[in-house]
Image (tube, rainbow, N blue to C red):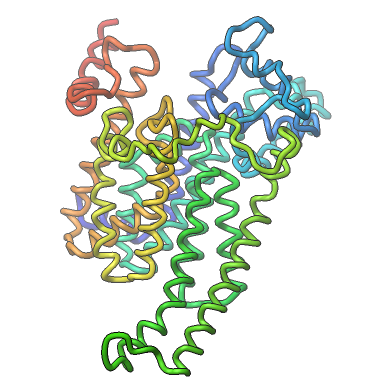
Amino acid sequence: MSDGLLRLPERRPVRTLLAIGLLFVLAYSAAAIVARKPGGRIIIGDAVYYYVYVRSMVFDRDMQFRNEYVRLFGLTGGEEGTEWVYRPTATGHARNMMAIGPSLVWTPLYLLVTGSVALARAFGATYPLDGYGLVFQASAGISGILAATVGACLTWGLCRRFFGPRTAIWSTLGVWLGSNAVYYSAISPAYAHSSSMLAVSAFCYVWATSVDRQTPGRYALVGGLAGLAALVRWQDAVFLIAPFTEAVSHALAPLHRSAGLSATGPGTRPSGSAALTTARRWRVAAINLLACGITALVAFSPQIWAWMVIYGRPLAVPQGSQFMQWTRPNLLSTLFSDNHGLLTWTPLLAACVIGLVPLWRRKQELAIGLTAALVASWYVNAAVIDWWAGEAYGSRRFVSCFPIFVLGLGALIDALKARLGRLVTLVSVFVSLNFLLLLQYQVFMHGWTTIAPYPRGFYGLVVARFVVPFKLIAQLWNP
């Protein structure tokens, strides 16, 4: 491959990312037509709970989801395990176990589709204007792809602020295409993870590029973006730890400097002026964090409103009180288990985590906040009762940490000073391994279990991905 072609992504980074996003849109649209579920459904699994928000608010102008559940699940009233659809909450609503945020991300395109269908019907078209048709459902998935693509662009822009253009684009491409982020950007974009890529990337971009501005206005903006991230996925409220560590670090900095400059021995107290300076810094930190918390709460308020309507209280854990096992987190299994372990399914992310060490040396304040957010995400994800996240491609709850992984990989690449050819080869190897596993997973999920085993155990997770393509070719060649 020519050197000029290898340099194309770094010369046209945004165009490269947008082209990938467009390819995902085309592939998803084609699959929506060819591989629909019975009844024409393409919104399945957890995506149903997000979808009912937007459909009910636009067409029914309420938060009564029973009719959406019945229609989307194809219920007749006697199915086992669906009692919750018909058993109302204390406020007379059907429950919803998911966040309202993704539906708000989808709303602009959903309204555009609704208006287009209404206009077409005015000119004689017969397409149903009911919010259930293929174009309505597809708008949610396409919105998810667009959100993930914009998130990738924002993360590239963030990485570019600290590293060169080559490092920034190849780090972004490596994590986007070499981890489970690609699955939730192209195959299941109607899950919340694609929207969380956008929300968290926007938060990280603004926070990381403005750490030198210790003002209430800046903290208010950062807090609002963190609140929006939590609105998309409640667990992403952990990213508030980044501005918190930053504010504390700035409050402690004068004390460290005064102790280093004026101390004459153990137990020496700072001078009066130094103490006043320290007290003032703590007041500034408190004001900044208060501004951050207020705007985060305001941004999160649509979810509070939804919980009030559905459950009659401002805070809720719809999955039940046992959903979070705070004192019994499965920390090691979440990383290393063959049951959707983060590093066993996506080994590239181990390099990303290692890269936080050189990032610490390069930009300590940034590394502290990102590391704290990653550790908090790890703990929260490990404390969920189904820490493996149900049926998933890899450890899907870590997709929110996409910007952290990209910056970590960027720092590692920058520290190693890899040449272009070696860098492209390394990224290509991890992306190829991920796509082979993705093919195996998809073949299994489509029922060809004799060709592709589920990715569990050494053979299923490590070896089978190299065998499945040949078995699949043989099957298609000699059906």
